[in-house]
Amino acid sequence: MKPRRNINYMSFISHSWHVEPLYISPKPLLTLMRGHASRKRDLVFRNPSVCSWIGSCSIPLRRGFIVNNPFSNRNAKYYSTNVTCNAKWREHVGLILEAINACDFVALDIEYTGLHLKDDRYVGVDRCYEAHSSGAKQFIPCQIGLALAKHVDSGIWKITPSSLYILPPENHTFSFNTNTLSFLKENDFDFNAWIHNGVGYLKPKDEMERKGCIEARISELEISNQQTMNQTASQPARQFDIGTIPDEEDRIMALQVIQRIEEWINSDTGEPLEIAMESPFHRLLMHTIIEQQFPSVYSHSITRGNSKFLSIYKSHAELYQQQMISLKKELDILDEKVGLRLILDAIATNKKLLVGHNCFYDVLHIYQTFYDDLPTKVEEFKNKWNEKFPYVFDTKYIAECQDTAAYSNNSGTLKTLFDHLCNQELASNGKNRTRFDIYPLPGTIWRIPKTMSKLVNTINGLQYEHCNDKDHMCLKGEQSHDAGYDSLMTTVIFIMQFNRILKHKDISWNQAMDPRGDKKKSPILRTLDNVKNLIRLVKSQPNFINLGNTKDEEMSRYFFMSGFPNSWKKWDITKIWSPLWVSISWIDETSCWIIVKNDEDIRNINLIYRMMKNPQFTLMTYDSYKQMHKTK
Image (cartoon, rainbow, N blue to C red):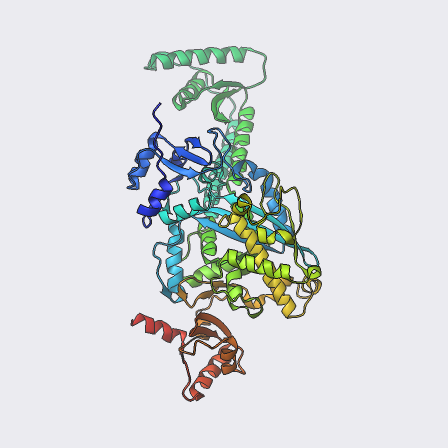
């Protein structure tokens, strides 16, 4: 037999189609993803719908495409070992909610089908928000990682990691950037698991609309039942003229059902009569016949699994009871369809601290995907966001701007920062090391990142093996850019940063985590209040946003300082503005943002600058900086 030709789709698009986004609807995508395995770790998808779907994207593929996948059996279950698949959702969601209720903070990470429509630089937080919110409305999150951290003893943290694929509701159309598609593939993103076992969600508006429709039907049913009970007698029976049915097969079906109904009526059984009937027309026809020819009984269409039935009852009370059961079941199904939003609602309701790394995209996508369309203005978004999530921390911002937790390597990537902090912790005194107890969800398997392995105290039910430098499978198992592993690394980074700040302040773990004191603030919040809600922005000036401050005048506290010698360090800059206390956000070696604390310091910093003779730098307000860039 002639071998089939395999085309590496991911390689093809990464070289030839690295700009244009693909517009995808989940239903044809699900059809597309059905195929069979051609060799170990590769799946070749071949389906009649492939050519038409690919054609709509203007990608001239003939045979299909290859996606990296660990399963070679066509009938294999599609799930990744660390992921909560749809089949495990019911079992895991309760455990996740319990862990959220008990945890000190929640770290998250999200993978997307794309980031932004234009990769530009922005001057002004409002312009940056406008551009990124536009991207959040086009692309969708496809995986979310959540790590739930609880301090259990001096320097010991319990972490419950989780990873979930996010599947949008039916008939939801979204964009897929081909660069991102290639990136996900290169990092072993399991497209089969995403499509076959993704967990869905409903926005509050959609949930309320559907619930309102069901509740309206319940009210109508109750009114109809009351009216029926008040009726004194049923209508007289009239023989239905079978000859009026034009199709012979339909007439035969009707006669057979009528015969079964007559036999059932004359029997002593008190059970309803159920007749399998898939055709909607046949069910409608029989409802009409029964109403006319058998007015003393009541018919109703029901669904059981994937099958449709015509159900007939001897009393209206039985019918009413069955209809109410069906509608209440619809409400239960609707509650399940809320899906992933249940987890985010629990975080919001409990006002848990939310931690991310370079997480502005995550923040925007959480609101856009699970709650509502992003507002046009950034100030309005801040208000709406703070109603749900008032405490957010960005480990990238902390690494760059918090003195005691700052990292000298400006790249600040998640993995680089994670490895650096873990290695520093390992080099510290063994007695005072931070330790981790990992509690994965039942049925999931997590490989501990190599640099973290010696800091792990216990692993509950986890298949774990220490790695060495030559262990390729274990190194690959670290799965950087898997949302679950990235959220785990973010958790560890945040704890290490917190630890460094405590050491700088000469505060012990027990003192820091003492629940006494300000009851409105968690121990972490009391310690890190000065970096709360400060989120790093990419390719934007200013290069961060304060989600907690919803007032326009906040930016009046920002001053652009530039042109100073590249040898200057933070100490040199803070010394210039002494005795004022200022925060510094670096832009490059010769420029930075100076942030003062209050209105009085705004006046004072301007006064100090005017009093300087021949300063080695320039200073301008945020408004002047924006105006300068508008005129360029």
